[in-house]
Image (cartoon, rainbow, N blue to C red; front, side, top):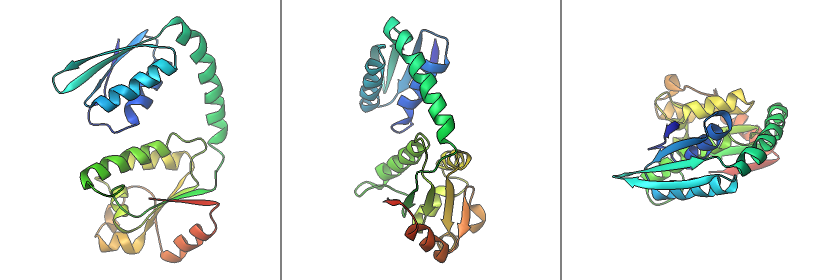
Length: 206
């Protein structure tokens, strides 16, 4: 049985990883270890939504979730995944015209620690869109998300591989002394950013 240790991973990473494991793995069941009850509930919804059998047990500060394929899952999911795979391949060459404008290294107001967890989950979620956004632009403290030590860099690189342009405000990177530490995307000036925003079909501001 394949085991996924998803402790420390924000939503929706545990669900997406489990769904992929069920699709790609020949095993009849997978175990997913998570560290919060919300992740357990999200995994339950995914499992039941794909016709799988779900169970879990609490183990100290963790939860051990077991998702077992059923005959319903085995009949329905393969055809669905084949269709999605074909669509995803086609959509990789498309652009949806949307620009995501991120002005902070945290998401929402209140707890900054929670905000950092949320922004990580949000950027990962962008990699699951088909087609992905045309561009992601980082300004102010948002540029920290593209620096070499940021846990968001792998997802940004994935977006670039999918055709999304990643742009970093040069003035902002310089202000935070990150010009030489940018690990994803291209450093651009404010005039370039302005042109991108005014020409966008839609703008999502974070």
